[in-house]
Image 1 (cartoon, rainbow, N blue to C red):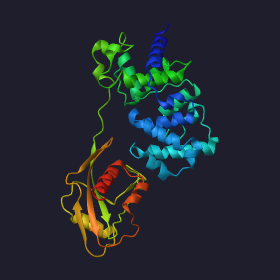
Image 2 (cartoon, rainbow, N blue to C red):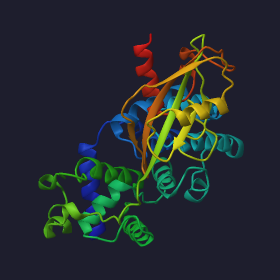
Image 3 (cartoon, rainbow, N blue to C red):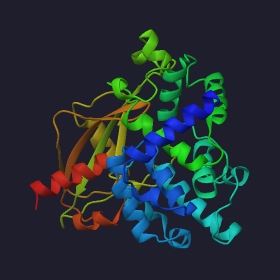
Image 4 (spheres, one colour):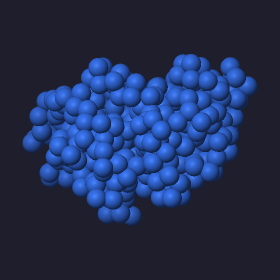
Length: 353
């Protein structure tokens, strides 16, 4: 028996005995598999499962998802981050309905052309839904293969991406590619974990190069990450005479695109006085009479994203005017807000019932 066959057989045997009972593993419906893969990208299973069930329950098929509006989808996606994925999800659903009459393409080449679907997702759908021989490579796969085979090529460089894809394809069980792919990802998630992997009970511990050479903690290799940018956000939480507030949509290509927020003044550093805010309010809003402004949080809320860190202060502004386009605080529930802002809204409403 070839080494590759031994690897796949041992992997699949482990999987059939130890796999977790997850809802998307009970179907070969490409729509549900696609939905799960998009939701679970860079999301823990524990968090992603509830979102998957919520989406699958509300949108029974791709037609229902395509017929929905973006506002609803963004609201349901709230908390997962990477909101471009939600927008791509909606766009792709509409494309599948329009171009394919609601039937997912059954081949990798057509799948990868769809918006928001890259090599990993196209391979996952092709193998799991249509039994096509395409290997998936995600973080779990990189980790298992780099350790078992002792590969130190950086996984975030083009050379590494190509090398691991070729190896994964060579190892793939072509008779049951979907099960093989799921087994490899599951193994990386529960046994060959980033920290404190279960090497003593690993089915590959007699052939793992990383274990043999004492490099388990060093693999996989990643080149140095990009510098993290610091941004300082000042949100103006307006309250008029009728206790109405105001939010608007983020329309620029930046984080949280198309989500809603309080009026924002971004500054180069943390603000300690209100002079810049007063100028901003006078320029942006036609307030008559006096208004009062104060900090809600004395220390900025720190919110870390992949390549930037936000330092956020919420400023409460009380005005004797009546705002145009104002809305009640209860109406905010109808809008998709970034988690950072939703957390503030929940806390503020709790203090001001």
